[in-house]
Length: 216
Length: 216
Image (tube, rainbow over the protein chains, first blue to last red):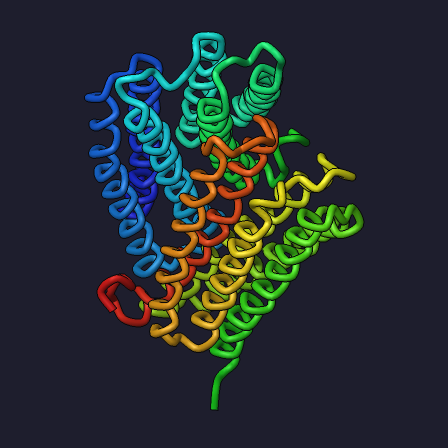
């Protein structure tokens, strides 16, 4: 039977997983705003960031409460500190979804992404989403195997970004400087979402195995 | 007379300030690499990131050690957790200096920044440096007044970034897409350094005053 302390610790992890769900929804809506020039979706992501920030504050306060009342040591202490960082990773991913939504809003009613790069952005968004889902699964289950898939997704993101740069810099690029800058920054935002997912996974893998994911 | 525990806590803060000095040096060298097409400076920043990562690990382990052995509560607990985040901010600023250095290396022997934007990049680098210095001073002295200057520097960074975009998108821009993308990303890197400095300062101000800097 679990004591109250372990229940509190478990609740922090559950809330992190829920928060990851909120971030996935925000990023999906931001991508829709971007690719469909959907200004309502953009506004909902920008306004909805408040809920993600509130989730962060709530999880932080709970973690502090456990740290202050229970004075955990060893693995529990490290898990709580890792939680405080993972919640910061998730909040930052929410900010990045807002950045994507703001590009959509800035260019509205024009669709900011030229047709030739729509598939790349779709694939980046899908990859980022899979990476957040994998990070959440690792938080929920401590399944370090999922971390391996996450590193593979990170390679895919890298490949997509290089492919995007080739398109932006090719002689065929006819959309000019402004969309090229938008796309370079958008690519960076999706890539950073993936980086934060990798950070989350590595924190858990390191806690569980004492090894960095590359060595698992 | 201070006890051993308070000495440990003070050492963590001192090491954060030293680490901030290392980050300032890395960013200054990266900017020199960029503006003078100095490949040796670029390589030294890229190789030197290891020392910044090691400083992070050392400060983290010391913080964990205090958390585990002393089980601090209240302000000391929050200061230690804030330290763990500030050390992550500083490590990330070091990564951003590496990104700047890698742009310099990628374009070498060409100077990546067209002459018209050299003053803007110089000013961004100077502003970022001042922001790291101000954040370190706030860590060292808990002088919340310095946080006000830091928010003003953040506004300056914002102004510089908008001015850069106007140049990149003006009819006079004759350098094409590739340098425009480089500059947009470089502007983002310097801006993010500043953001991390603001985060550090806000953490201290909040600990000291219980208020966010805007309200100080």
